Length: 101
Image 1: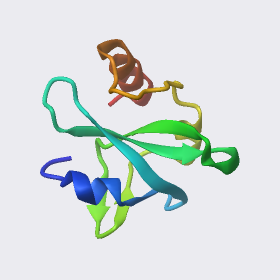
Image 2 (image 1 turned 90 degrees about the vertical axis):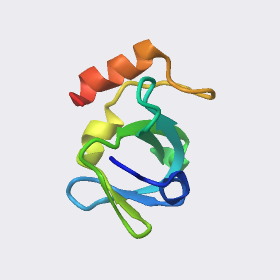
Image 3 (image 1 turned 180 degrees about the vertical axis):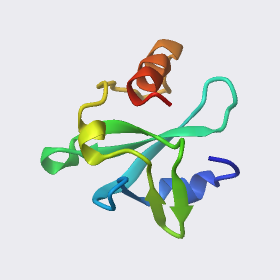
């Protein structure tokens, strides 16, 4: 996604490719090379306790809504990383391989 404001992403509600509500964006993660927003995390599961990484590739921001290009099921099955300081190059590569982003 080009020229997205971090503040807009951080306050967005995420929706999957079929229009199913995922929930609030928790964090925005930057691409390790470009420094541009590349991933967001969204809490899914029981009480939204597990954070899932969702690619911004193919996503669009419409007001306060972020429409991503992947399904909720694909997001639920994505690699599980606990990240506090940012994705490592290996984690980002694993996510790119999984999502083919």
